[in-house]
Amino acid sequence: MPADPLLAWFDEHARVLPWRAPDRTPWGVLVSEVMLQQTPVSRVEPAWRAWLARWPTPAALAAASPADVLRAWDRLGYPRRALRLHACAAAIVARHGGEVPDDEAALLALPGVGAYTAAAVRAFAFGRRAVVLDTNVRRVLARHAAGAALPAPTQTSAEVALADRLTPSDDAGAARWALATMELGALVCTARAPRCEACPLASSCAWLTAGRPPDEHAHRRRGQPWEGTDRQVRGRVMALLRGAIGPVPADAVAAVWPDARQLTRCVEALVADGLVVPLTVTGATAGPDDEPASYRLP
Image (cartoon, one colour):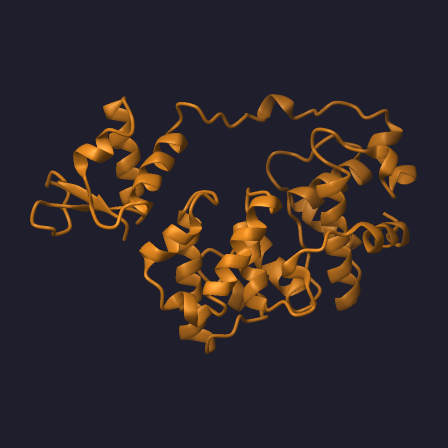
């Protein structure tokens, strides 16, 4: 994959994003990567700005209550990520003196930080060489190198090896390469409507040369409906609790969804994930044999 045309394209077309600014902090980069998981940039940017204004350091977030963290997270994707980020901040304070580590093993040991997030933080926050392989990068590599419309549903070791071979050996070059490849996938080499005519790599793209064959894994991919799903139910319960000042009576929670069995299943899942606390009439946390009288955020 030729680097020069890609990097020249990136220099001209890269989006101006606050977590890429010269004054970015490692904490700001880490927060952005957690927020951007399955959430578009347009929704993340204002939330990121508000979050960093309120909790500019890991120590500031670690000192917040889980309930405040969940309220601030609002509808930014499944809120368990917010609690993991809260736990991550606490671990950074306890283990690293409040500073985000740049060591891969130390990053991977933090709550909620996986291989991609660790690599992204090392590359984008510290300018270190790392193999950054997100959905956009996987798609660019699949099309350009393998001639496939989309990568396999599950990441493979072959993809990681390919990305490693293509990533420049020097720190600065690798970090810039990662950003450029990711940006190309986000803006041009998109999943549903790729703009091949605007791609700086079009002349060497195996997929375009092959006539843009269809996705061979289409039968394995499933859409993610919203209406009537457990995700919708959980979202309604969380929205109700986020908007309440104190505990919400159980009958008010029951009113958010007509299917009592589905609602019970979803509430139990939220409790199991630590996102909701069931309370008895006395205000004590309900046990497995107690009938909750109300619910609150943790």
